[in-house]
Image (cartoon, rainbow, N blue to C red; front, side):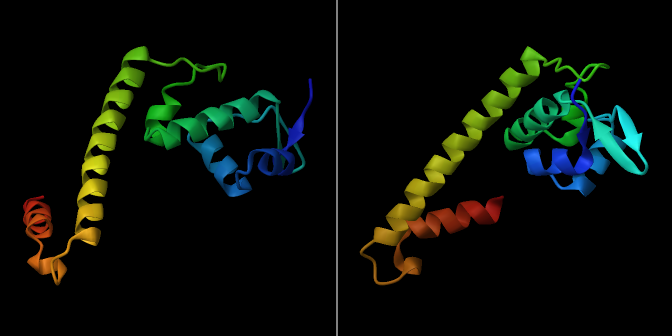
Length: 130
């Protein structure tokens, strides 16, 4: 089995050593050994880090991601949680698309100023309610 030093893992994954230590602290990854004070990891840690990154990009919290790994570090993904996250992303995409369209309208609005643009004024009123 290939053993990777914490520096190798940091370099290959693009994850800072301090982040690796934090992930270990919260139970996301586990070193297989130590050489002096330096943590040593098995090659599977690179896949775990890729999955952690993917989970974070999808909007899962670290505590949610921790629960997605079994005791041996293999992913145990809840299909229900994945569906719920995908639904939340769909909603976020709809909201951002609406916002993008509104901003484009305001940017191209022929009104002399943004405050004279009726659509912009509606956007401001809606933002004030949230």
